[in-house]
Length: 406
Image (cartoon, rainbow, N blue to C red; front, side, top):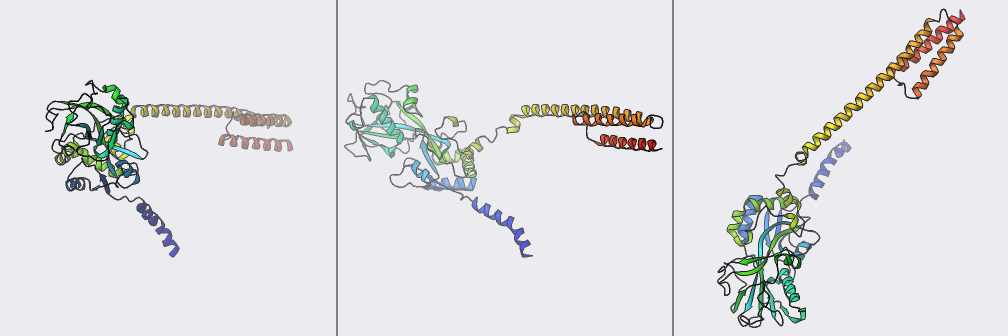
């Protein structure tokens, strides 16, 4: 009785084990940079009410980038600009906003012929942006400078910083990066005032970046009295590939379907949310959860290939019908052939009372040999008809033997 009970409990125990192994904590840790200032409580309420998941704001370790924190498992979500090269295990969810390059030049350099030259300059890149560093490298290359010809600062040093580079969303209400004694300048011009890069050339030198303008008087900052020619890059919401497909599906669904609520919290951070983005143009593969949501209205496999499947079914049906027809014809042909052996056997039987028994035996053996030869050559089928034929031959043999004894 105990063994039977244990056997019945095994499936239940296995189910509990599988369920326990498949459990996923419904919490996503979200890391943001300084310029991504947001009301954490309001953000959490949207995801909690609309998706039933908890999104908490997390910090990376000092000196640790968002990408490294994501790869190490310290966080689950991060915002990374599209200039970042592909990294194994990272998956994109969606573009969230455009990061725009803001270039501030010290008032002391404004008006000088080489104000945009990097030679001898002390440069501070806000948040140590990878895209900002890459842009400095491109500018230095075009000005025939080596890394030792300029200095990158870890923090802003008032009075000695020559250039400030900030890459983030256009947010007139929160220009935390501005400093007194600096003015905005065109970031896409060289020291002689010519256009620094063409749109096509830029895509090769700094993949993901594009030319754009900051409209005049967007910021109450000197230099923005007129349009500012600058650069922009998409900022992506990314995660790890091992994060639950269901959680990322719910996250994606919530962000797309409740965009107005996110916009109310931080318009500059969620303005670019749109389902029409080209996921093939991203530098990270799309997470399966995000893909599932974006393709939710796509036709299923059966719907997409319905006509092809119908044709294949029709062809298979024709082949099966043809095969059955040939099989029936072949069976009928073999049946007609066994009938001829029946006819010849009955002809011999009719001669038993009047014919030469020795001669009849000889004919019967020849008929029997011919029938088995046809069976071996598959001209006859070893079915019930052939068994009846062999029984008939045996009966005729017996009748001939009895007649000969008489």
